Image (cartoon, rainbow, N blue to C red):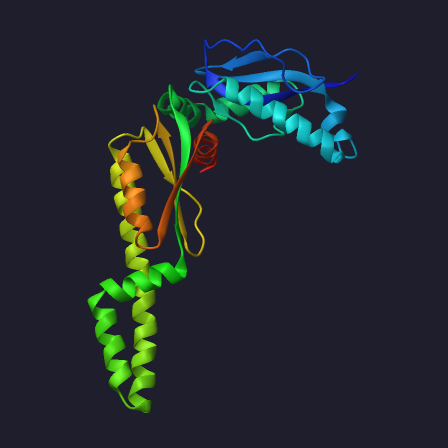
Length: 251
């Protein structure tokens, strides 16, 4: 049977492999070291990840993904988890892959030691935020009053200005909340990465050596009164920081 190497995570050289099972049906966990970094791997049948192999079974994939994440969770505070499905045909290409990325991986591993990843999201409740801005933004109040008192033609123009002003006020408020959040985290975080954003949401991934600072709870209460929620999730293995290190290596 042809074997491949399944990679779970990158670790500093000299680290020890955890004593626990890897993927269902895989061989024992071991380390492949290349310079300052190592990969935690286990041998698996190459056919698992070949076209038309068992990877086409969604239940199998789900079970294996859970096992992958369990291994990464056991390495909390000392490893960079790789995405599920990282397979190498043999040790030589794995060593080459590590050597090409050793610098960014080693730097990110040094930052991640003793830390966990947390995700913080700022999300607006549009009607509540609009109502709060209407009550607290002087320019919006002025334009709203002027539009209400104007004749039909002037009112139309003022209402368009008011609509643009609302959007600008909304963006300023969310940007100020994000700036305040990152300033608070800067005093506690080992590193942070702005998260993907979409309309009405801003986020950040952060490496923290402990729990998020208590000041965030007060900030969450203050923001909620304005129609913006602050939610935290974690602790997680530092997936975002692993992706950042690998992206930097390709850059």
